Amino acid sequence: MLFRKACTFICAIGLVLLGLLGAAFAQVEFESRAEFAILMDYESGTVLYQKNADKPMEPASMAKLMTIAVVFDRLKSGQLKMSDEFFISEKAWREGGAASGGSTMFAELNSKVSVENLIKSVIIQSGNDASIALAEAIGGTEASFARVMNDKAAELGLEDSHFTNSTGLPDEDMHVTARDLANLARYIIKTYPEYYDMFAQDAFEWNGINQRNRNTLLDDGIGVDGLKTGHTESAGYGIVASTTEGGRRLVAVLHGMESKSQRQEEARKLITWGTRTFEKLETFDDGELIGEIGVYGGEVPTVGLIGDGPIDLYVPKGSRRCLSARIVYQGPIKPPVDRGQYLADLHVYCDENLIQKTPLYAAETVEQGDLVRRATDALKELTLGWLK
Image 1 (cartoon, rainbow, N blue to C red):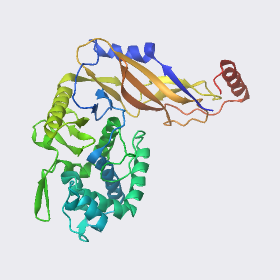
Image 2: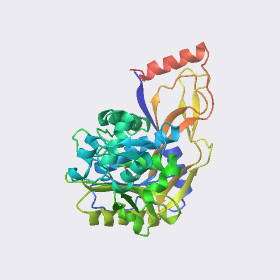
Image 3: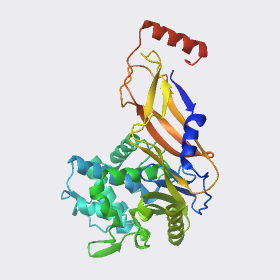
Image 4: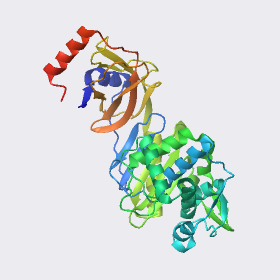
């Protein structure tokens, strides 16, 4: 059975990180009235703030970000075109239309709507009818489309999220985490830049009804250009927002608030705090060796680990020391190991909080060792009791 092994480099990596800082620092205190929250640096994935970030929560309409990710994926691959037209079925009209009392595009029963307009409705109006129409066109049924959503979540490593519908309407089996939503937002921004400006569109009109974007942070003058709000009676008010204020992009997720005004205020406070409180720490250069792990039965006993490009952190300014780091991997690592092969993750902590997880890759190729090397490693494993 494979065991999980954590190599702690407090003296190696940890001191390197601290040595690069100059001034000492620690995680800066911040309080949010949101029940769930996370603030993440877009480029590095560094977590600047978190509160119940890994606790399951009802996504409300923020689940539509996964619907949009699936649709964008089909557009990028050529399986869909913006000009394609889909029918508004009775299910979409009845469960997502005006009669449902929820967010709607006000699309007419059995009408045909282009993919472009359906996407705009989902993003700007949070149209449930538009979401269901897209789901049925891609998956055949909304239940089948939910399986596509979960496949996409698994592909992206969103391990703590499960989707059962395209809209985010309440379902006891559907849940996400703030961390997963932040990483989903980062994926959308990075992978689909050609479509991302749709999130900043201020209004959309359909069937003679003009509706403003529900993300009112777009008008706050703090650099917000997306992404999605959400609300149900059971979940409260939430938002996934991104800003480029201060010269870098941040992604914020807040959920479980009591009103629209509280959502607006708490999101604004968190984003503003994040843009003013942190500075960039250039930690490892592109190709710089970060650590080594053992290779069981390899021609050499260890393999070096590097990042995919430089590894940077965003850290709070001018406080006490807090950084430590670990290399975490599934072992034993067996040859052959190819250069560039994913092998481990670098976990960086500020005090007890995991602030960043970065994948690490083999710095070189390691072939299988000779019989003597394999026998020696086997004896070492048996003696140390690593194999179970």
